[in-house]
Length: 322
Image (cartoon, rainbow, N blue to C red; front, side, top):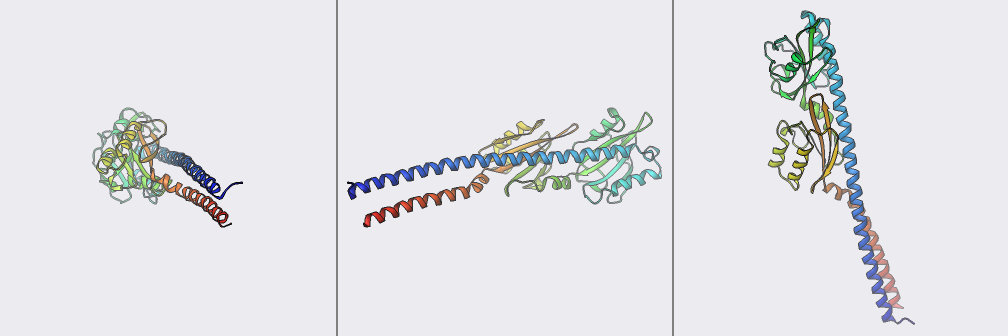
C-alpha cells in the first residue's frame, strides 16, 4: 500500500517530469516554429522580389519598344511639323501615369532639335553628346533597337533636376544615322509605383540599387535615393548593419536571385537586368518579425503547460484532502 508520504514523493516527481517535458517541448516547438516562419518569410520575400523584378523588366521592354517604334516613323526622319506632333501624341498618351516626363530628338551631333514634355516647354540646343545612350546610338546601334541608360540628373525639360532613366533609340534616314530619340522616365514615381507597396510584414524594408550600390529607391527614407546604400547603412547603423552591407555588396552584379540571413535581418534579392544596366531589388525583414509571428504559438504553448500543471496540482489537492 502507498503511504501518503510516498504518494507525494511520486506526485512531486511526476510534476517535475511534466514541467521538464513541457519546457523541453516549449523550446523545441518554438524553435521549429521560428525556423519555419523564417523560411516562409524568405520564400515570400523571394516571390515578391522576383515578381517586382519581372514588372520592372516588362515595363522597360514595352516602353523601349515604343520608343524604338516612334524613332522609325517617317515624320521623325522628315523633321518637319509632323515630327513634334507625333512626339506630343507619344507623351500625351503616357501623361496619366506620371512616370514619363518627355521625349527629345537630337541631330547626329547630339544637339536637341525637338522636345516634347508634360510641361509643354520646348527647351532646345542642349548637347547630349556625352551621354552613354547617345554614344551607343551613334556608334553601336541598329534600327529598331533601344538602350536603357544609367540613371542621371536630367538637364532639360519637365524633368530638369530630377533623376531619370533615359530610354534611347537611334534614328536613321536610310542607312545614315541622323540622331537619337530619347525618352525620360522619372525614377521616383517609377519606383514608388512598382516597389512602394512591396512587403511581407509591416517592418519590411525595400531597396533598389544599381550595380555600384547607388540607391535608386529606399522605402524607409525616400530622400536617401541617389546616395550609396553603404553610406546609408554607415550613417544609420543598427544591429547587423555591417553584415547586411557586406552581403549586399557581394550580391551586386548577380545574375540570379538569392537570399541570406544576418543577425538582424532576413534578406532576399533579385537582379533586374536591363540591357547594360544591372539593378538589384532587395527585401529585408528584421528578425524581430519572426518573434512577432511566433508569439501566438508561444502563448498557446504557455497556456497548455499552465493547464497541465494546474490540473495536476488540483489532482494532488483533491487526493490530499481524502
